[in-house]
Amino acid sequence: MDILDEMTKEEIIRWIRGRIFYVYDTPRRSQLLFYRWQKRSKAQELKRAAHLKAADNLNMKQRDEYIRQFSATTDLKEELALLKKMAPYEEKMKKHFDEYKTIQKADERIDKLYEQIDIERKKENL
Image 1 (cartoon, rainbow, N blue to C red):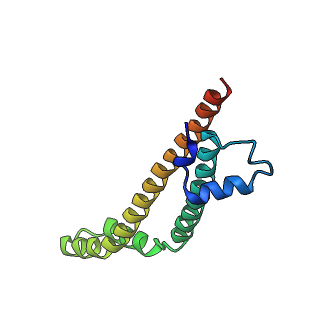
Image 2 (cartoon, rainbow, N blue to C red):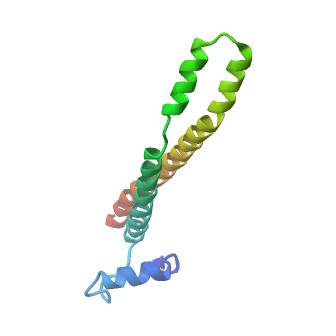
Image 3 (tube, helix red, strand yellow):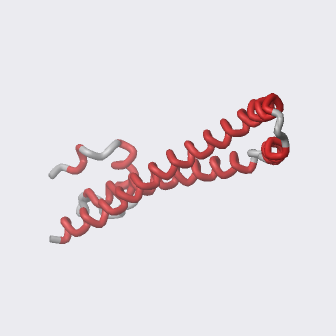
C-alpha cells in the first residue's frame, strides 16, 4: 500500500508542494498517475510540435517535378535517372511518416495511462 515507494523524488516533491495539508492527505496512485500523465503529455506535445515544424521544411515541389517528367518520358535510362533523383525525397518522406507513427504509438500509451487514472480513482473510492 505504500505508494511512496513507487513515486520518484520529483513526483513526491511535486505532490507535497501541491498540498497545503499534506500531512493529513497521503498520496494516492491516481495522483501519481496523473502527475506522470501530465509530464508525458507535455513532453509529447513538444515532440509533436517539433515534428510539425520539420514537416514545414519538407519541400516536395522538386520531387513532384521529377514525377511529372517521369510520367512524360518513355526512355528507360531517363526514367532510371529520375528515379534516382527522387530517392532522397522519398527517403525524407518515409522518415517523416515513420516518426509520425512513433508519435502516434506514444500518444496511445499516454491515453492508456489516462484511462488507468480513472480505474485507480474508482478503486480508491471503494
